[in-house]
Image (cartoon, rainbow, N blue to C red):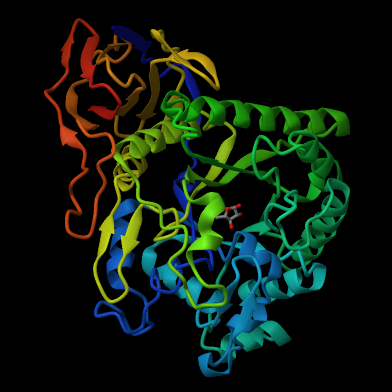
Length: 498
Ligand code: AHR
């Protein structure tokens, strides 16, 4: 089978915002404790951070990290996590039924971000708390000094402000499971007043309003429209969350998860633009896809551990070759919506539904999904191009007939680099990708790397951390402005040109 695309820098979708390469650290399971922070670990630095995890984070090229939740944030007192560690309270953490020791808080997280060369994104609690606590947290983080909360930060050792620009107004407030869940009207009114007060403290903030927790929420789309009617003038982004797994063994639909993500993005764009038209505004609201990934263990985590333990090993999904291919196609979907998706955070960074895993006291290793992320983050830069794929179809129970080829192309005008990201969704058939490059007459092939395997369930483990890695493929042919490359069945590919 053969599929084709046209690569022409004249057809630009939009510039890729670096914050599309974001991640998420929640006080959940072993993401913080045993993940980024483990003072007794042989690799721990003077602040107790695992330097092996810091290295993998930097290597991955994560540009921004959302913190501290997630569902966790909706019951969180941020003041519990500041000051001398010995005095910090041990709390029952209700969202994940865990014992929270508060040994990591906002100052530690800001310090970790500096070491990881990444930007902090903070979320505020709009479940059990509200306007005052959010405004005070902004004062604590961003006000230089000379006020009650900023002076506390200085006393706690952080002389310079943390300078957190991007803030999330709560988390998944449309969900019944959320502590302090609200209707769209209740949330919209609270978010608007909270945003107003936060901006009074620091007018330079960028703010994200909560969108829907997923596309099958009963209030999906009307939630966004109603929340934005209340918040339009004081927020900059609306959030999206999506997690995917094969349902009842339906692998074909799972491989087409990117189709669902495309539809979700386009529906939320429509809701944002509806609110814009209705309110008669010229400002545009963009999208923050601040939780996305493959996630298997969703409903079962409560059965796996005792409640009220510290940092239990929950939601520690292991990702296969097939999962990595799906992650690759989700990245394609984000990149091809670069005109509206300005922020994206894969969830989560380490141990909890994450591309890297650690053992307490032991090593850290890359899961299969780490690889498409790292390569897409390194090479999916510049602008996303409209490539209009023409492809054979594969049929799926959930999404009907979908293209066998899922392709996104990026073009970096400053370096002339072109990156073709291509997924072959067929479980059995290879696919020849033909790319028309006549608009780039001087383009030369750099490499073709692909992630695939005869065992689609293969995973990386502590003892075999490199079982699943991208492999260099024979160089694609390029003649008379036409490139041809073979995409193995069930594969994710990166073809680089310069
Ligand atoms: O990332 C895990 C959880 O998924 C988050 O806490 C929540 O926001 C979402 O439902």
